[in-house]
Image (cartoon, rainbow, N blue to C red; front, side, top):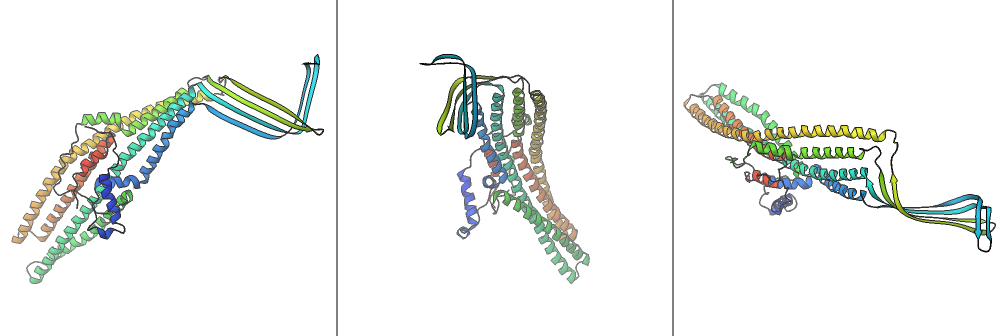
Length: 471
């Protein structure tokens, strides 16, 4: 039932988007009309346009380097050092035993060397291979978890982008519906006002009908300005996300939302409480906090390294017009054991801090698990109750249309006034707007339900997109 994979961009959806963008440029005259932008095309456009998603994608690329850093912690570390400078040196050896061919041996020998304004050259190459280091092992585990966290953040941001695009898309459609509703009401009022004026001029009706129609038209002017403002803002928000400014595929008057089935609540609750992206991120954070405990678990944790070292020193001096030289070279291979004996209490304080942070992360993960279940329940109810609400609103729209027709007929025979007709007209258009609002909210809840369980992908977006039709 559930599909967790985020599918790559489809060329079938990229091509219409490219044509839309092209039509807005120099080749607009080559197309008879702008191609409609559907929900999937809008999402594809937002993937390359939205800076928040681009930041998450860059974060995932950076996160992959955490794996490489973890591997580097267990690999040999090689460093080279070299230095030179002027030096004055004085060395004295006394009570030494001396022996040399042809010179025999002597006890109590003394040697003395002195270099004034000499040149000293030092170099050192050291290679270390960790054999046992609990702190580095924990650090490597943390780095791997941080890489995993970056991937989960990208997946979550991809799903959140779908939700943001869908909300912006439906906000534009609802703003269009609201504006169209107000325009139709104004048209009806304008016709009623014209009729009222003509009949008043002929003496058939009182002036009150003209005043009522005029008052309703004045009120609708304010509503029209407000509706147009909302439309412009919603359209600008969608353009900011997608970069595309074109006509949108929309719901038909008789949209069928029944194929969008919410499924069983128990399944969604179990899935959300085990696979929610936010829960997954918090669990990874808890794992990172637990690894911090292992880093400082032992106050005297030893460090054992295999060490290979090559070093040399060259001393050149100038005295009494003659050059003198001293050379030292060494090569060593062995193991080095380091045991911290006293750190001033730092290691113990770090350990206690890590224990407390681990408990905090564990409680936050449990809180996130409960929140994921609440979000899944709310979204599931948004779908199931939303579908019932849509059905009820469809019936209400039918009833309001019947009432409008009956009121217009009553006005023709003198049983209803022009105010009754205008009220019925307003009720019908308001009900129609609320019906589309309920439909858009139900579709958004359907996508949100999948997002709570980390199951929102292009396949599910296509399911919603199929109920849209080109304008």
